[in-house]
Length: 234
Image (cartoon, rainbow, N blue to C red):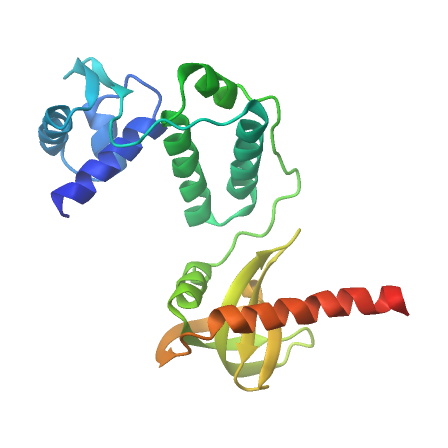
């Protein structure tokens, strides 16, 4: 792993873990040896980061020069904390971790008073009914959408019929009880909403549909809005 990546991960671990944090815990979080942690802490200190503590006692990041100060209103802080908590509750494992890391980074850049508001925000998010855990291919589908690459899969529809599909994934939608992928279906030559849980044998292909994702997604969303409006007009 390049040293710059290690230092970035170490800073992220400092922001996420409750201080003081031991070298052993940092090594576990960043997947390197304790000896590497000691060297990287010295590198961060040499770069200007104020890290209090020592081996055996634990470390605390008291100032992080890598991030400029941010200023949010109390209501904005409340919205950020609530929104990221919802992602943690509803997203798959990778999104949940990303939300926790994003919140830690944001809080680390706030002045002390606003940090306390973020840590002790009055709004919380909790779901008693948990969504079925997302299958591991959800991350592949998200990456394919960003990279605008076609995906091959086997899909079981509501009647239980299994078909082989090639899709152009355009985006994901987290609903109350399931996750769907908005996509252009090459088999049907039309837009479709696929339930992620009903996909199997999902594979990334070399076919690119760049740069069509954004205009296709706009068309699909316009079509969905039209479907919602039509019954009201009738």
